[in-house]
Length: 211
Image (cartoon, rainbow, N blue to C red; front, side):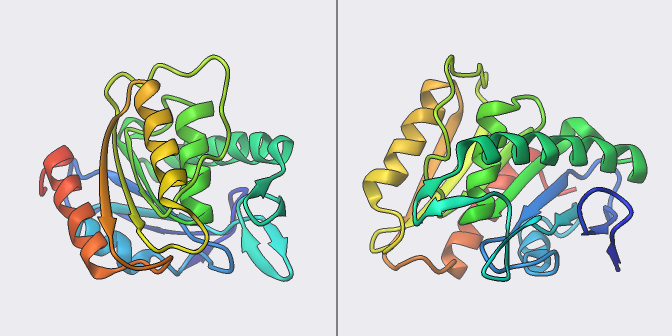
């Protein structure tokens, strides 16, 4: 059931096994709190799922932060929205009783970008992240100490929105901050493929196990 009692309209599905992680599911532009529930279940069938809806509307389409043009982000808004999302995760943990130290983000496109922003601006909120088709959201100074934090990234070699160089730039930025980045390439464009989901599920099982 969709819940709007916290700051974000969201869906929460409890874990199906004790000790399973919580997946923070972050949709792309035009998505909502329902879009990635199937992805979350595919990534880890026993995980709790926390799926908020972005609070910014662009031509009626929900997003997690404003942009000024394609690939040009409103950095002040991004910082504020990143902090708002971090607060939401903490409040949801208190409300639903999941372990705040075992939250792993899984985001696509705009959702992957704000997940990367959480890693860079609010280290400690996430225990890991699966970033599908992400680009560099912001370059903080100084970089955080991510201390071998596991990050999975996947991208399309012919993505019209994010160049391979842009993907590599984010991977290198996260590595410079100390993250342990696994980068997976698929031959297509900006759409999320089943092969990416399978690769991310394997990566996640290696990180947290199949509860």
